[in-house]
Length: 280
Image: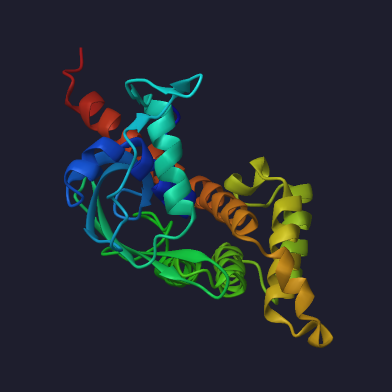
């Protein structure tokens, strides 16, 4: 069974449906489910899921057996398969599960996440908040960059996708600024392209397709600017798109800050041992 992404409402629904037997027996039980991005661990981690509040009827009134007949004559009920029970629960949850309050706890660092499913303007929506700030910021992410990543995560968690996109754009601008590039984001990207060509660019950028940066710039600009009052532009900024932007920024951060820090720590450990080895 594929690992569920519990940062999404679909992932949460599937986690509940796949553990239907547990929740039907005791709706407030905890189960080990899929994964979320843990800002404290700076990576995706498995979590336990615990339900704290749910709408009446969410976990009651299920058919646990299929009712079948032959030529109109009643027959003993046939137990539903696991797949049929999961499908039954999914249909119920997709039909509406708000209000729904739950928590995740990271199995590695015990970071707490509080989540709520609420009735949005058109359908149920998910909001998820971590006790540790930072979004996808890592241990070595500069403070200014981490600030905008935290803001992006908070916006993303409540479905404010245009705002999240603007914050991811700001984080990219700070990354390039800290790398020594000047001006607005467009100028910074162009300066990076020139630096890659003449060999003076940061090492992390030499393995990066600059087309990613141009996409973030253009989409970020659309999120920030009024576009002549044409708000239809904002419809292109979907949850799936913002998730792609998040993964792209995450890869840049890893190459720019985490890989050098890990390389430095590994080398220092090896050098310490080498220095302690008796010389002949």
